[in-house]
Structure formats: structure tokens, C-alpha cells
Image (cartoon, rainbow, N blue to C red; front, side):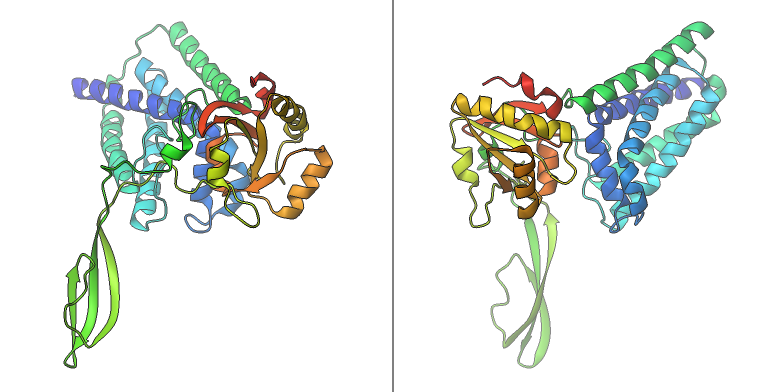
Length: 364
């Protein structure tokens, strides 16, 4: 039992630290996932949406700290009870999302590793089993440091988590796993490679022939002989590959200008998913940065999900000398974790990214 407990202790502690750190690297991204869970379509508790970021930071810091506590043997009773409570809640959440097909990606490992809700559920079930073993055998969880060493290590881990979380919120994630990271080409990420896996879909045809209703299942050809097609249903047998970037666009009121702008030699895109909620201090910096870029030959545009009246209001209020174009809000939140933020492209390849706090660090 002692050996089993120590093995589970290492596995659970390590996984909680890893999973928590991945989310702590991008707490804003995790808060977006929580907003999805809190929405009407999933848990139907929209009253929590305004507090998603605070909950996000609390959960990921607590997750990392519990992992550290478990590994060093600090307050084992509190640690095991807390781990059990968290895993029971997350197991319920992932089961609910998977069973009712509410969420496509659980967000357990952020953008580093995408797990389907069912994959995440079974991962949580395995963790639950190991934590139950820890719960039953918690007398075998012995501290590996002195009392003073345990206290200092626990305190330092908590302070380090808070400090790192604050840093990435005020700047950008230290590690970027998204399809808009520096070095990625957006055109390439919008396409599938020639060897991409195609989706396998069954077509279930309902039809009449000689007055008799029949059904046939195939891969899309339909019945060879029929008098009338009553209907057809589809069932995905095997999911196909999808491009890394699916919904990115740069649109005016009249046309799609995506390829035109991505072909620019030097392009700066100001990203503000919501002009209504954009940070005023950041908006004040935009014109100075835009003028510097334009003097060096860069084309400067803005991307937002806000409507035309708000675009005009913001341009006038901050005396901005560039146009805002339309893009999906979820995509803009993915491109840069700031409102506003900026990315610099050279023929569609991302060369620089900046939070509004760091706009002055961009080099043109």
C-alpha cells in the first residue's frame, strides 16, 4: 500500500503541477473556456461569467499549489481532501460536457494538448481512482522536508504562481501554443496538407421504391433505384483533419480582404476583439505606434468584432489614422491575449506580438 500511495502521489502531484502550469501560462485563455462552461448552452449559470478571470486564476494557482503540497508532503489531510473535491467536480463537469456534447475541447491542458470531452472524462476517472487511493492511504504520505522547509517551499510556490500569473496577464503568455504564434504563417495554417485525413461519413438514405419504404447506408452515392427520396441522415464514423486556422478573416462591409492583406510585405494588425471593453490606456498608445510603423512602410489595420458605429466612435475618440475591419470575436481572442494587442506580419508570417502594455517594444 505504501508503494502504491507513493506512486500515485508522484503521478497525481506531477500531473496537477503540469496541468495547472499550462493553464497558469494563459489564465485569460482558461477564463474564456470557463465562460463557455458558464454559458446558457452548457451549465446555464451566466451570472458567473463576469468573474471567470478571477475564478480562472484561483483554480490554476490552487491546482499547482496542491500538486506541490502533495509531492513535498505538506498538510496531507487538507491536500488530499482538496484534491478529491476538485477531481469529483471536474469529473462531473467533463462527463456533463461529453454526454450532452456541449463542449468540444475541455481546456484541461490549454492549447498545449487538445482533449475531447470523453478523453478528458476518462483521464479524470483515472485521476479519481488514484486520489481515492491517496485518500485511503494518506497515513503513508510523509513529508520530505523539515517543518520549516515545508512552510518555506509551500509559501514560495504560492508566491511564484501568483507572480507568474500576474506577469502573463500584464504581458502575454510566456509559451504560445496557438496557430498564431511567432514564426507561424497564417496562410499555411489555413490549409490542410495533401496527406490530411478526410472525414469518413455514413449516409443513411430513406426512400420509396414500388410503393415500399426502404433504407440504405452508404458513403454518399444514394440508392440506385428509387421512386422518391424521403430523406437522408449523416453519421460521422471517423473525424477528418481540420486546418489549424479555420475562421480567420479580414472583412470590410463589402468584401473579404483576407488574402489581400496577408500578401502584404509588412503588415501591423491591431487586435481589439471588443472596442466597447478595450483598455483605455492601451487605446491611447495605438496612434503613436501606428504612426511609427507607417513611417517605416508598414500597412496598419485594426481587427474587431464590434460594429460600424463603435468603430467610428473609437477612431474619432482616439484620433486613429487606420481602418478597423471585421473578424470573429473568438478568433481575435485566440490571436492575442490582450484587448487591444498587436501582431506584425511579413507576407502572412507572424514576426512579432505585443500586449498593449508592450507596444513600445515592437521594432519596425
